[in-house]
Length: 183
Image (cartoon, rainbow, N blue to C red; front, side, top):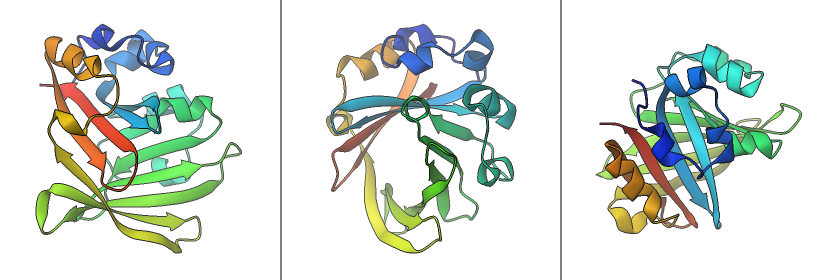
């Protein structure tokens, strides 16, 4: 599904603004993250070829995945690291995230799983490159606009452009998220 009103989100991410017309047409979702006072945008595509076009190269964990969505934090590419996201590989796993160093070496990966006690929460398990546990069960929850700590006009502009928004936030960290996609 193409973002017909992506220009409404212009100027919130220089990396998002820099996508070509073809790359913009391939977007299925954008996830804005406001972390420690810094805004970043994750572009989500339905095909690995567009992801490769945007990132230059894609790690094996991503290209070999059976997934419907391929995401990359665009600002992480500018910073020399890369954060990639794909759909989960098991029914209880919603999403997998991978962080790579500037030289393309896996630093850590995360499993986002459904909380069996609440549909409004995800539990995040974090592992190092050797799959040793770093943390288990970090909570990320969905809710209302009060969860979003980023630019307050961003969700309003998205909604005015006819886009759908979902608010998320980590419970114990200074991180909030705004998922934006076609209604």
